[in-house]
Image (cartoon, rainbow, N blue to C red):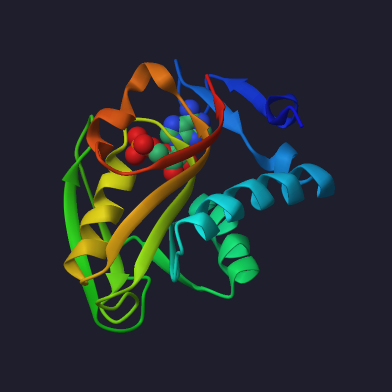
Length: 170
Ligand code: AMP
């Protein structure tokens, strides 16, 4: 399946100069969504993942179905103030300003083999923060999965040493 046929490019969204890659047209197509999740599931299964972690919000759409297919748990990574129990926090720099991501402290345990999934790899900042949270919890990050990678932003440079699966590259 040519997954790129199901992605819409939206120029100047959410701000001038950004080429937004809209995955709602892929996940809105039953067969394309199934095939994308199946490929990402095979990647995570080969790595013997025991947990799938996904950042808010499109990491939930990408990671949660994979977790269910594998009978593995799904663990959300979210902005501060959203998770109800004790969290681990990680602060990181954005191009303009800062961001913080959180994960429940008991979401990942020592010995867990974790695959982290998101819809899109841009600068890699979100994924790098998610890796730090999983490793701080004692989990082993065994792989990273994405639907889309924007090659020119070189996000991979921040993620050296981790196996990466991507369905579409631009
Ligand atoms: P980054 O942390 O820079 O790798 O950004 C990744 C996150 O930002 C992902 O969760 C994406 O959903 C979102 N994102 C960044 N750039 C785009 C884009 N051009 N189109 C759609 N989503 C994007």
